[in-house]
Each structure stands twice: as structure tokens, then as C-alpha cells.
Length: 358
Image (cartoon, rainbow, N blue to C red; front, side):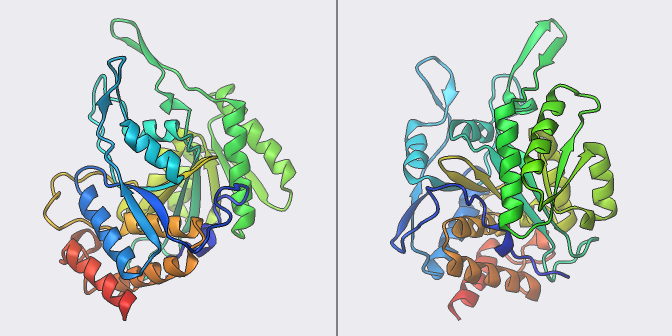
């Protein structure tokens, strides 16, 4: 089985100037521990970074919603200022209550900081067996609009309308990102995922932008596929795909499907890239049923932190931490329950630290 590594996947945004030249001095990174198991896995990442002597200071912030002057709830200003100041962050899982009046904090964060591209590499983990071998795909999802624009209203009692917003600017931006990503990381093909046969105007606009960007990158193979066809083909043979770019909702669904091929969200990292910053995160749930019990698996957040390090060009630290993590999983002696083991989060963390320091 192919080794799970993100080295070729981490030249995320070569066109951005603000992250091109990091000095070796200590950098400050915003840390949002999150809810449920978030504080535990965040503490695990901090412990592992300390063991590896990563030159990072953590600016820990709370994003528990607060009431704004207009009576609505929003992210605390101190948290917004931290991300704006540091330009890079790491985030644990956040809980959004289901029901009227509750806005997703994850969506709010992406919109506030204009994190327009979600990048999720899904690769097989050596030593952790699943039904699929040698999976190596990257989903790139437009992160700011689509069905997740939050434009909903009740027309009459019992009839609710939700508006799907697609703009040329956002579509062109994420398409350009996908082709630049493919070129920078030695990828050979970009697949645009859509339903333009049904949503001719909205998905049609997205597809038009992808086609125009494909013409500007003739060295990258380009194909168009319907969402339902991609889902079918992905579970039949993931090797058909390389880099996939798509609107917001499709990306949410398809990226989780791809994660399932390699073992689930517990081993899948994620990064959100914007014009003026980047936020890396674990995309699994808050798991309140095991919160505070030392049972959580920190792998997804740790691998997201590894993505962050490579984005900051701290590659030697990223390599050291990633290798220790995968060696620990491969050995199988200190795995958490979701990885088929019986170890505690603290024991899994301690083993990774031991490997780093040995």
C-alpha cells in the first residue's frame, strides 16, 4: 500500500506572496481548539510540536459565539483580530446546533476570512488496511458560496426556498487555484465536477470558468464529469481521478466519500486557503460522547498541522512529525479505538513524541 504523505500536496498556493518567504524565526499561529474532543486533540498537537521543537507560538482563541450590537450572534472580535494578525491558523472541530437561528461557525469563519478554496488530500495510510489500496486523490472545493450561501426564506407557510449562489469571480478563482495546484504538485489531470445538465445557469457558469482556465493550462489534462457519475466511478476505481474541483455542496459530499476510501475523517487532513491567509482544520465531528475521556484520535488535526507547516515552508519539521505519526500507525502498538487499537489519546501522542525524539 502506498505510503500516506502530503509532500507533493503541500505547495498549496504559489501565487500568494504573503506565504512565500518565511524566516526561521518563531512564528505565531492562531489555534482554535474547538468543541467536544477539540481541546484534547489540540493539546496533543501542541505536545507533539513541542517535542519536535517547531518554531511556533500558539495564540489560543475561543470562538464561542457572542451577541453583536444588532442582536445577532457572531465570532468574538478577539478571534477575528488574531487570525487577521497571524494570517495562519489551526482549528479543531466546532459544533453547530441543528435548527432555526443557528449559523454554522465553520461557514462563518470561511466567509469572514474569505477562505475560498478547501483542499483535502485523500491518500492511503500504510499499515491501516481499508477496502481500497493506493488511493491518491485531492478534492478542491469552492468554499464561499453555492448552496451554503445561507440565503433562505419562507415564501408561505410550509414552503421554503434556498438560493444557490454561483458567481463568475468565485468560480474562476477556485478553478485557477485547482490548475495551479495541479501544476505545482506534479499532478496531471483536473476533473470539474458539476450538474450543468440540470442546473444549466449556475453549474453552467462554474463549468464555463473551468473550461476557460483549462485552455490556459494545456499541459494539464482536463475532463468534465457529472457529480453522480464521479461518485459511482470513485467507489469503483479511485485511480481514475487525480485533482477534482467543484462547487461547495458537491465538494462537501465528495470529499467525505473520498475520506471513506482511506479510513475516514479521522485520518484525513484539510486546509482552507484564502487570498490573505490560511486555516487548517480537522473536519470530523466534535464527538461529545467521548469528550474528556482520553479516547480521541488526534491524527486528522495533526496531519492538518503538517499541511500547515508545509504551507509555511517548515518542511523538515513537517517531515519529522508526519513520519513519526505514520510509523506509529503502521506499527499498530499504540492506536486509538477508531484505528482498531486500544490505546488512549495520550498514549498515541506519547508514542509519536518518543519517535520524534529518538
